[in-house]
Length: 521
Image 1 (spheres, rainbow, N blue to C red):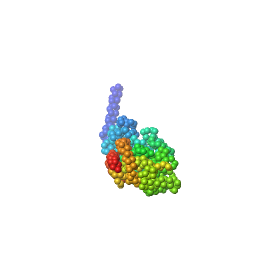
Image 2: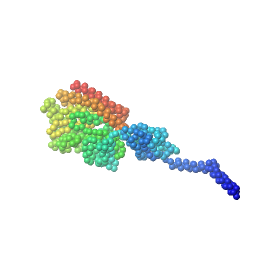
Image 3: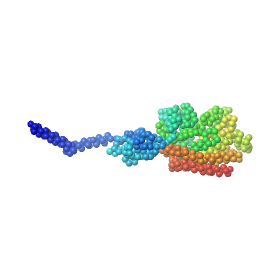
Image 4: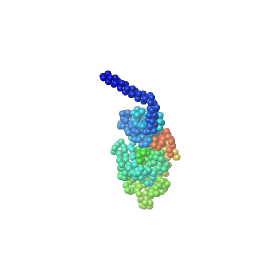
């Protein structure tokens, strides 16, 4: 019985082994047609269900030791975007990503998550590809935090800012390295501004009015703030440097300004020069309720509600205070300007008691003239943005400075483009003033002061340009002005640094020419 049971078990084991081998052979060999059918079905399923997509994208500190924090990249359709700190180079970053598909490429080079290095200075296009060749492209835009404050403007219902007359309501916030200069969700309204800058260029300037007075990035409290686009000035610096000359002058007040990156309804809109507005205010042109702010202007540039008068030489727009035509206040200022011009063009114009000196603050006239002549500002000869201010019973003062984006040779339609030759000296008032030897002597002495400041101004240009290094790159990526003609540029250069160098060299040549020209008067 024992042997029989043992034989039975051996036969059963043999039978089971044979059956298993048969099934295995059937799957591997003899059943090829069925196996192929299964594989074909599986492959067909893969081909019809596999898609190409990037599912997540990061820059992790573990693979990028220079990063101060992990960076999550937001995926919005086919665009991936993120921001990094200014002091982190982005020309050799390793990305961590997950995707659906077979392979990922950049410029036909296969990418490996956590390993492949790319330069993210400009937008990088990632291509995800499936086994059957289906592709999907993603643009990775890694915006370098430029070090400038970031201003976020959100208009009500995301309305566009498309009018100089009508304000759009909204909110503004400011993010800056210095938390003291931050601003969170402040009510404001905003509209367009400017003349040629509004109608000619795609990057628009704005005027913002806050609900309540507030500091703006360290500038004294007020409601109105101007956003200068600086589109024609590829250095972005001409207004700022002219203002710097004003800050070291004897002029009572010159606008403060600072640069910021501006986002409008969530979209980057460029680097702007945020400035104080030329207006009556305790922190601006301090004229109280009775002082006058005047602008030499052109009739076609006036608004319907502007109050203006003609002197013997110019049209003057009364910016402050609000008054009526033919009122006593209106006649006071009109007669004061006309009396000054009468004295200026009289035979006794140089008489200290009865000539022009009776009517004007000579120091302010000289400093305004010299800054305008040094920069050879095209509009300062007679056209517009020539401001005067007057307190009743006091002398007429020149200033504040304004609108210098076409200065420092940045025009191709006038001789102001050349560093040589007088320009503002031909302004009707100054042409006559230069006929007085006493005035000429004062100009010569005062120019020596500005000549002594030349190195300071050159260093300031370098300092400001260096601070804009990243911001101007982002601005040019948006508006693409470097290397192409923009009205009314006198030169077209290929790089931002060349634009800055041209401005500096023009300024140096100008100062040398003026130094000799004034000495020869």
